[in-house]
Image 1: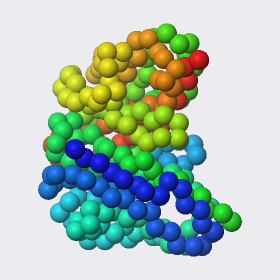
Image 2: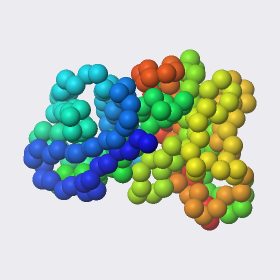
Image 3: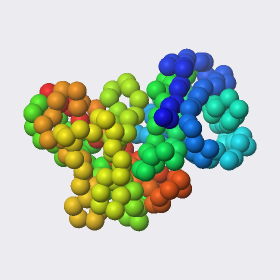
Image 4: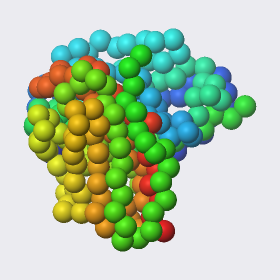
Length: 116
Length: 116
């Protein structure tokens, strides 16, 4: 069965610090997708990134970067120079081929608090 | 940019009452989903729907739940007799393609259901 683990339930940093959110996944499939979503206090799910299992290149988007390592089944997310607006719950998710509906399996989320 | 629209944003209902949560997926999307998030917990898959039938459902999606696409644009989730533990945020999602093509997986902003 597929599983996503976000071991850090809560992280608190001071503005301008760098922070890394960890995500470890389990799947028996060789083809799968990994996602990160941000959930601000308003509650909606904001899509951040999608990565397929054949693309291990790291990605950078502004202050955000993602490190995908198949050898350790991890897909970690780093925010550089954090800002108060980054305060949110961040979810990592996985979709593989084992289900007909291609649903997402979410991790438990990491609550990030960035203090001024 | 096309959106998945959910109504209402917040619904309060008495225990034992039936409730219908409504979603309008993106118009050219073919795959539809409902997810649930109990306050402070992770997002959980409920059901996926394609070609006018359920393609996958979770253990949470018991006989109290049903889904329907009544008119080609709306996608509804009905809870037949609500319980206190049904209180949660319910997210609708849709995507255009099947298989492992997970581009365009789009979430609505959610309906917060409170059962009293």
